[in-house]
Amino acid sequence: MTRVLFDMHTSVTNSLNGKFNNLTRFAECLSRDPAYSVHAVYDRADGASIPVPYQFLRQWYYPQWGGLELRLRWALCLARTDADWLWTEIIPGRHSANPRWGPSRFTWGENMVLHVDFQHGDLHDQRKRIRRHRRFHVLTPAQRLDIVELGVDRDQVHVIPNPVDIPQFRRDGLERDGTILYVDGRDSDLRVLYRHIGRETPEWRRRLLMIDSDHRVGQEEYVRVLNTASIAICLTPSGDSTTTRLFEFAAAGLPFVTWPSRGMEPLLPSGTYEISKDEIQWTLDNQESLSKNLKMEAERFSYEATLMRMKDMFR
Image 1 (spheres, one colour):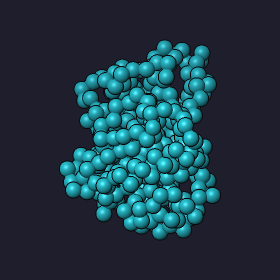
Image 2 (image 1 turned 45 degrees about the vertical axis):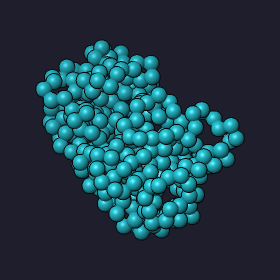
Image 3 (image 1 turned 90 degrees about the vertical axis):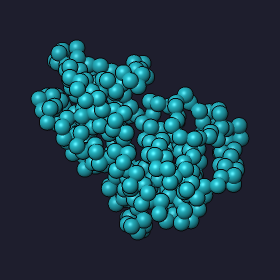
């Protein structure tokens, strides 16, 4: 049995956090293969269920002795583990939850995979640190291009986008009811939403359903809405990376409208990547064909398809 330790310290363990959901799904996906034993390490507890064996480096929000405490706790964790492989991750740039916590200082040589999620330009000062590693995991082809430009061999960079457990999000047989779904996320600007769904479109405003920190729903209700709404609007910019919610929408066959994205557009080409009244109306008018296409595109990111790519990465 191959033992893999997943280090996900930059993720806040909250079910509304797309990064937490995405990283945890990689670990859960690999754990579906009985040939692998998976264990996860998170920074701190913040009220989310975790489907794989795990531990927290700390139970409070701020370390008592600054960044040194986290480094010592992580070094102790590595000393105690019996893992064959280490999967660790960095989020450079302004989206890093722990910007002073440098996991790439620790290397396991050949048996380490460094997951790097970033936007173009975030790695301009990371060249030396990045090139210390020999195996990389990125989410999009656009990210691989940037890693290769730093001098990394293309064959060392594995592109494995967000996995999605399709049976968890798909409910066949439900009818679309005209609901316009908005799910809040990082860097979303509600002013943009109301600019396009406002006084000039009262019917859209009446059909609008919002899910955010003030309007929460349980997992079962969330899945039901994904399978009964007619369109979703996502204002979380993906850029060169991905947005976890879009894969959930695709799994349920829910057409979506979002910002242009160099990362997402090649992965889910049936999405609508422009925010405007015309594009919202076009998506509503073509929701049946878009739904069918998105379901087919989502199959490429199922746990079964992703598992094959992950097993290749850990060889």
